[in-house]
Amino acid sequence: MPYDRNEDLPLSVRRALPPHAQDIYRAAFNNAWQQRAASGTVDEAAVHRIAWGAVKRRYTKVGGVWVPRWESAER
Image 1 (cartoon, one colour):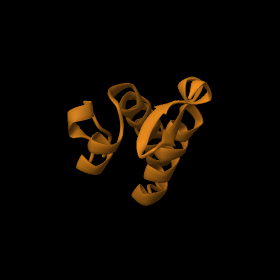
Image 2 (cartoon, one colour):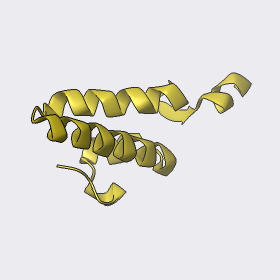
Image 3 (cartoon, helix red, strand yellow):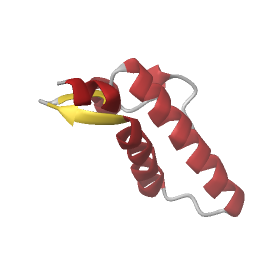
Image 4 (cartoon, rainbow, N blue to C red):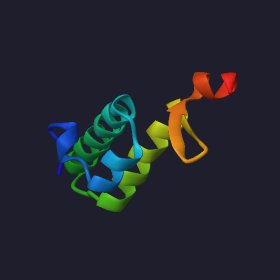
């Protein structure tokens, strides 16, 4: 089930990620869901893993907080 708004994301995602990272997660999830729905093979767990992978390309966890990768280099 694609997400229309960040507020529709799972609570664990909303609590963990800053708003921009939530945008990335939602876009990646929705895209992966649509691609798999078109082929008739939606594995929701796999789609969530894809979304987390998209977040991890742009964000990293520093001290328990997700920060943009460019900011983590400054710390």
